[in-house]
Amino acid sequence: MTETSYLRVAITGGTSGLGLALVRRFRGAGAGVALTARAPDRVAAIARALPGVCGIVADVAEKDSIYPTAAQILARLGGLDVLVNNTSSLGPTPLALLADTACEDFERAIATNLLGPFRLTKALLGALAASARDGRGGVIVNISSDAAAAPYERWGAYGASKAALLHLSRIWDRELASEGVRVLSLDPGDMDTPLHALAVPDADRAALKRPEAAAEQIFAAIAATLTAPAREPVP
Amino acid sequence: MIAAARPVQRPADAKLLAIDAMGETSVVARRHWTELLRPGDLVVANDAATLAASLAGRHAPTGATIEVRLAGRASLDWDDVAFDAVLFGAGDWHMRTEDRPSPPPVFAGDTLALGPLTARAAALLGHPRFVRLAFDGDAASTWAGIARHGRPVQYAHIAEPLRLWDVWTPIAGPPVAFEPPSAAFVLDWAALRAIRAQGAMFATLTHAAGLSSTPRSMRASPCPNPITCRRRPPMRSPAHGASSRSAPR
Image (cartoon, rainbow over all chains, first blue to last red):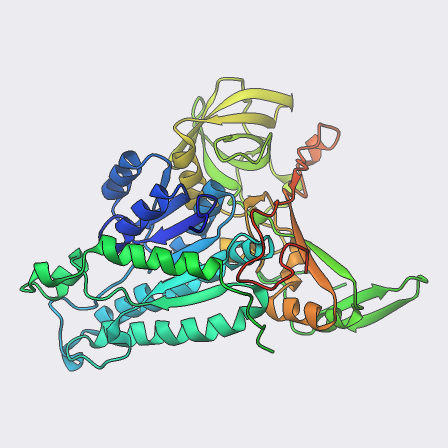
């Protein structure tokens, strides 16, 4: 089993669904964990319930919140080995045809699902690269979706932003090979989460994957990445 | 010399004075600085991120406007949120630091209201403007308050206010510097690649750079300049990164 208790992990959108399951999984493995979320009461409740977890109130879609968030993460953890960009926005809810999607809803999806992960990763990249140099880690996970690849009707804002995030992940993973930093794009599948309920209110919840199961798979993928052989840097 | 006047001091045509081992000088384009490196050279940079060390507020006993500039800590521990700080009176960064008016007299025990933060002057540190601050609340709320309410230390020669992203170097890690380690601004990610392409190595240390300037009246006082360094120890064997990750590169 891979040793993970030394890890310092930041997870956005960490108070519900997959994000909360990841917080619990990493904390259960002994890792230092910082989570971000928008609702102060939820952040405080999770931080109280999970001793050792640092809760940070932040909206990653807001440019002005990125560096204050990065500062709090790094102040608390002293550095960073793993960043999970998990926060997601569906865009309009109920889901809408693209032509019926308000520009503001589309912008919100782009800001949350693409610009937020880009900005936060950029602010934390120095710490992640230092982690890689020190032989600790340096793994970025961007939570993706099958909507990033398949053109589902009414998922336009979400799908377009996730497709862009997928491509950003691929490019950044190549560019950061020389730093020893990995950028993974992982699709957790259809989960029984508040986001899914918002998108598909009449879904059969029993048929959906438990977020804890998806968190276990992502945890395993990160652990495997940490022990994978060295990559050849991209010239 | 061209005085800096913009928040982001990384012009494409910046120049660099190079001095070789024999003392000979030459001027090169700064963007080509990595070409001066030779195989086996080691580039060491400060990876400290910069705190939002300037906190605006009021001196509660008098109601007077003050600015607090955080200037030092005894340790880098997260839960050590007792800061040494320099106090300023009315005005803002548009006035030179040396010329800023004094704050009202501050006594040990005085309360300072700094946006969402409340701090007490726990002790005077040898000068009426130099104090140790103890923040009310826990470490998490103190760091959150500093990050959200604070601003980077500003400079009179720059008209626009600096934001955190202006003072955050590309390689920034732990937020422990009170002003930016500005030499690290030249280290973008293309430069790190170029260092390795030259056969040189790269390593970082963390140095909590202190305030570069204090009020004129403090010149003969204890220097609020913390010097705190640490080097991160490797935690495990090299894995998914380059095979030589345990060594600087």
